[in-house]
Image (tube, rainbow, N blue to C red):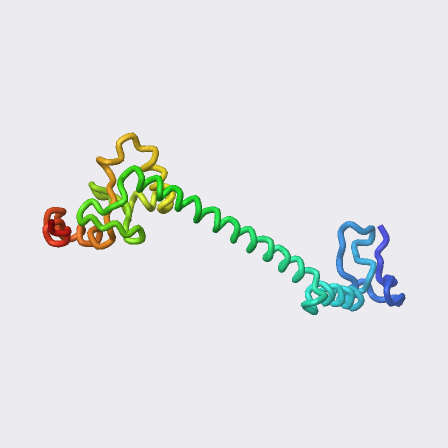
Length: 174
C-alpha cells in the first residue's frame, strides 16, 4: 500500500500535506477532497445561508410554517374540545339535575359534580380531568348513588361540615 504524504485540494487547487485534509473512511486515500480551510469556508457559507438572515433562512421559514400550522390546529382542536366538554357536562346535568342538591342554587357556572362517598380527586386524576369523569357518569347505570350536583359553596363547605349542617344554614327558607 502506498503512503500518501501530499494531496491536491479540488477547491483551491494547491498541493498540501495530508494532515490539512479531514479524514473520510469512504474515500480510497482516507481523506476529504477539499483541504480543511476550504471545507470550513464552504460549511460556513452553507450555514449562513441556512441559518443566517431571518428572511432568507430556510430552517427558520420551515419552523415558522410548522408553527403556524400547529397553532391553527391547536385552535381548531381547542374549540372542538370545549364544545365536546360542554355537551358532556350538559348530559351529566340532565342525568343528575340542574340544581345544587343541598341548597338549590341553579347558577350553571357555580355547579359541579360531587362524589358522594369521596374519591373525587383520585377519580379526576385517573380519568384525566372533567371529560373522563363526565363520560363515567354517563356510562354508569346508577349514577345517583355515587354522584350529585353541588354548587361550589356547598362542595367546599362539605369538607368541613355535614350535609345536614349545610342544608340548615344555607338552604332557602320556605
